[in-house]
Every structure is written in structure tokens, then in C-alpha cells.
Length: 145
Image (cartoon, rainbow, N blue to C red; front, side, top):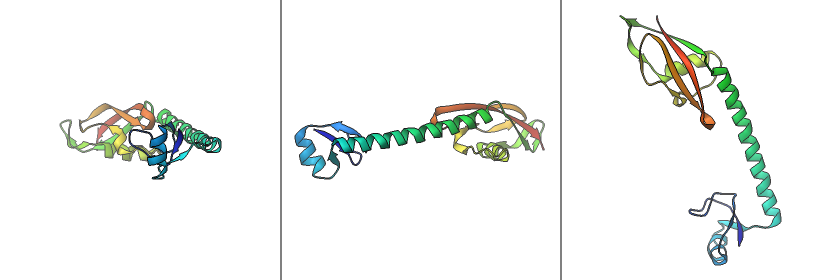
């Protein structure tokens, strides 16, 4: 029996998927609990249109992420910090780097920046992992304030 899942069902599939299940399981459990609907040609067409819309939205989001990655790629961010003898009093964190990137009118979440704690003056390579597994590296130059 072909069904369209109306909600996520463990060990069967996610909402909106079309699945083939045994007749008794489909009729007595999934349809009875309104977890699924019978897959009619009209219902299948609706599901396919929704999948196309989701795919188009995903492609648009990927394109936006790629353009952000291109604008960030090999950029140099300058961060000023107080130091003594080449060692910083504190450390440069992802929050500091994100704030400097925002000054360039680009939005990068702190979670995406994998800088650790930078404690020395000088140039440091920092990796940024954006959505859709796009990785960009930027150069962070830490200067004395």
C-alpha cells in the first residue's frame, strides 16, 4: 500500500515522503491514527510540487552562502588588542572576530568560526564553516592597541 506520511514516523520516514508499507500496517495503524494518507495521484503531485519548492529554496540558500563565502575568502580581518611583550592580556575569541566581520557588513554566526582562543600578536589563519558545509579561511591579524 502506498501512503503519504503526514508526520514523521519512526523507522518509516519523514513528513511528506511517499512510502510503500504493508496493507495491514497502513490501514490499521498509520491511517487510523491519521499519521498518513493514501497516496492518490493528486496527493503525489502535491508532494512533488512541495519537494520542488523545497529544492528551489535550498538552491537559493546555497547560492547566498556561496556568495558570502566568496566575499569572505582570503579576507584579512584586523583586530586590535592590548598586549605586553607580544602576549595578549586576554584572548581573541570567535565573538571578537564575528564583531569585526560585522563591520564589513557581512553576517557570520559565532558558532561558525573555529578560532579557539588566539593569545598572540600576529597573523592567524581562521576557518569558518558556513551552512551547507562550505568552509572558508580568513586571515586574522592581531595588532597592539
